[in-house]
Amino acid sequence: MPQVQLSDVNYGDLAASCAASQIVDRITDRTGPLPQLQLMFEEQHRLLWLVMHPEPKPVFTLPLVDSVLRVQEALRAMVEAGEPMPVEVIAYRTAGPAFSLGGDLDYYLDCLARRDREGLVRYAETACAVIAGNLSGLGGHFATIAAVHGRALGGGIDPARACHVMVAEESATFCYPEINYNHFPIAAAPILARRIGAVEAERMLLSGHSFTAEEFYEKGAVEAVVGDGGSAMWVRDFCRKSAGSRRSRIAIATAFNRMAPDLTTELHIAGAAWVEHMLALGEAETTKLQRIVQAQKRLLDRAG
Image 1 (tube, helix red, strand yellow):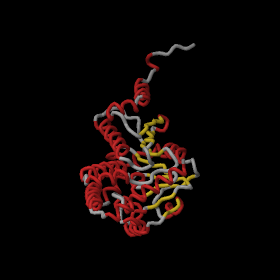
Image 2 (tube, helix red, strand yellow):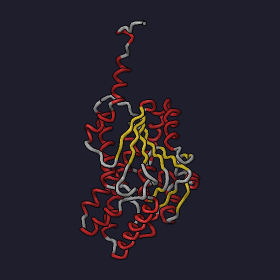
Image 3 (cartoon, helix red, strand yellow):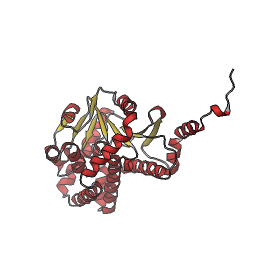
Image 4 (tube, one colour):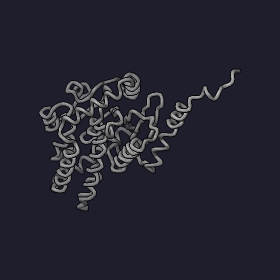
């Protein structure tokens, strides 16, 4: 058996491999516990999955959104500190039968009952920070992808659509129903307008209609439609095919973001407007939101 010489060992590759195998631990060392979020790293694709497990409903709860933000902040800090970074792609998917039924109405209603302005502000600011991170690739350091299945409603679409790439499974549906309840999603206007234009985005948000994955694709709001159950594999194939052009793709996305209005300012204004709107809701309007909560429960009971 041939002996391995010390000169045969590529210590750079070995160090990179060790760093890759430990990346999840390195992230969680910075973030602490991540409620409702699971991290999975696929070294061959340099792909970090953020698998969302919202509880007790498939909505964007504050603990989930906060967990995602802490991961984003940890990754950005690690890059800026010059630490080895095997991750090049951040991808989102959710467990369960739906991608997201939107924002956490239970949380909203609880804040309204207590007139908790700070609670609403915290939710809006945390959600907007996650959305900005997805759109910018955490300051141009990563490619971002979302894999959507099942239902995606209202504010549950925005963090996914903010990613550089969004893929949807054939049976996925998209809808912004908020207008039917005198409500609106925090970041839909600035995010959707960047993809399909302001006029089409306004029509979509004011319609309250549900769109199939294919219809969403035809409007330019999603990059690809794949067979049911195939979105994760599509993401892996995309990682493999785009590996040689990844840096240029991120640079192009960053360039287009610079051409658009300043997102940080837009999201700050949108979040503040959303908080004021929520606090101004009357009894009839909060009753409608309570009915949606009840409808969500019935829907989940049937799915269960």
